[in-house]
Structures are given as C-alpha cells and as structure tokens.
Length: 89
Image (cartoon, rainbow, N blue to C red; front, side, top):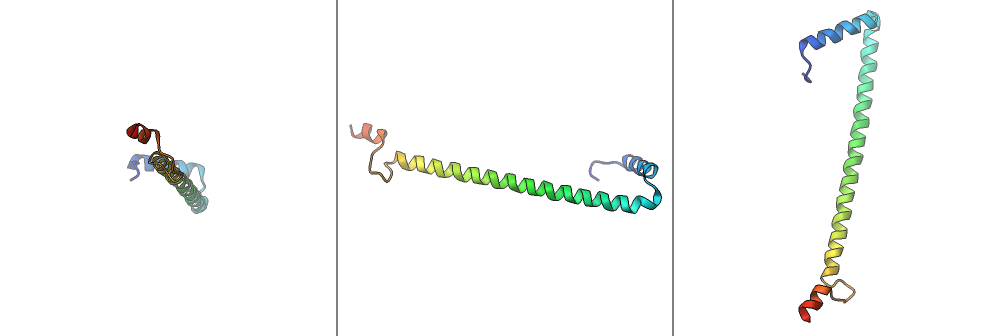
C-alpha cells in the first residue's frame, strides 16, 4: 500500500499516539485529510496549467512551421522561394 509496509504503519501510529491526545485524533485525521485534499487539488490545477501551456506551445510551433512551409512553397504573396528560382534558373 503506497510502498509503506506494516512496520512503517505501526511506527506512524505510535508517533501519532505519542504526540496527539487520543481525544484529538479524529480532529487530527480530519485536518490531515483536508490538507491532503487541498494539496491534491493544487497539484491537479498546476498539472492542468502545465498541460495547457504545453498544448499551446505545440499549437504555436505547428502554426509557425506551417507558415514557414507555406512561405517556402511561394506563399500568398506571389513571390517564389530561392529553391524555385534555382530550379527555374
């Protein structure tokens, strides 16, 4: 389970019992659960922002590459590229 063995779980339980009063344990776990939930939401938001940025960068790269290819083929301005000039020459 999450790479944690039974011995680690027992150690964690003992440490919790030492530092947290038994009557405060439910409150402790509730707060811990909320903290992990908030951390997960923040991680998911950052991961989505990263993915959006990567997708936007890929779209921009493709667009600029397509424009460069279009210009090499004698784009919309009617001018021929150097390669076409050499082939005609």
